[in-house]
Length: 216
Image 1 (cartoon, one colour):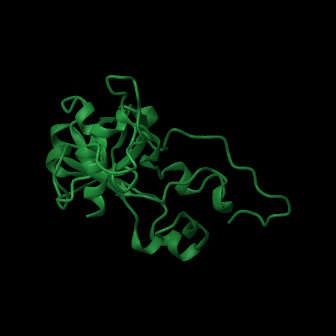
Image 2 (tube, helix red, strand yellow; image 1 turned 45 degrees about the vertical axis):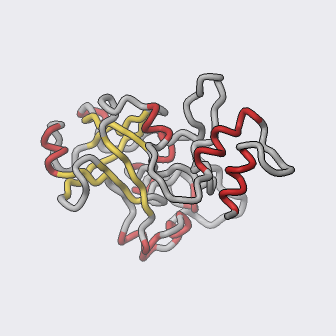
């Protein structure tokens, strides 16, 4: 019922009406019954140029990045990999442990792959919250997290492509506002030999607070 009220308001019913420019969008997505539609980015991206879906999820043992302060957890996972189906990797000329560029319409990030069978051949995924900027959580500059770990955040857009009027919306679910972490389309390209072994992009190191203890 609450969602239908939004929908009816978009149709001109009730005392509170949305702006005319937003009515079509509200009427479409505030459907009381579940329905499927192509994610906004997927609908705007050339699926031949970016053929793979990319997902991130957080490991249960290090759900938040502050787990990087825990020496025991760092022994379990200090570097994340991009999990790729064996068949997909073979079609791209990739082998286990290769370094690749993961490219989207928003940019690219470099990471190391791990070949698996337990993922859809059209999907790649990685752990989130493992890759960290140098200096974060007091880690040394040679920490695996900031030299080999990576985040897909850098290639996920925070806005949709412009519509016919030039307007761009938040790249998020139009009903709940949840960020579109799972709508990403990518392609993966093997790195040149001299590019392998370290992640990019790299950003300016975080400065340590004064009087802080030496990095572990």
